[in-house]
Image (cartoon, rainbow, N blue to C red; front, side):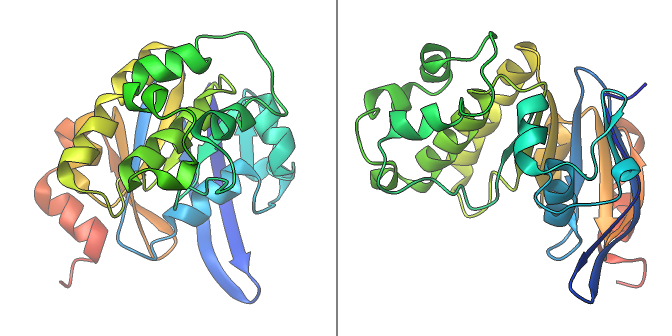
Length: 235
């Protein structure tokens, strides 16, 4: 049985429907990538899984339990942590204080603590007393990832972690993913950069206009398949 799955997931913002019957699954110790153009519904999917958007209870199951109707704090307490798009650090807090916020609401023994996060991203250890906003975009992204890891999640949702960052910085951040996986987290990575997503994923889902248009393992999906699923066959 999948560790986390959505079944027939729909989502609305007021009258606007953003997701149409989305089915995805994440297995234990797996990294799944969700790719798609801007506006495909990837962030809405992440927000639905994390409980930021509420759904029908059965639309999202985690470890065999329906959680679609649970609020975000309960889902996080059960072991699903999100690295939100845009990082969302607390500007008045230091790097270390921002990281410690990740432990609120879920205190479990596990691999991740301040020391192991600093081992993963050494620059954060050097800057631990700096305000979070005094860091570069890439370093702020590391803080956002570290904050999510501090809850020792079983599932880590990463929403557009490379957005707006220089390629060399993206490489540094993606280098951390195998280590995060080795420490026991299953991951869903939302990514516009197809090559980046394919490099880290065990399986890939492509979304377009609120629907899953393609799924498979990176080695079975051709460039044409992905292009058509990403942009539509008419492009």
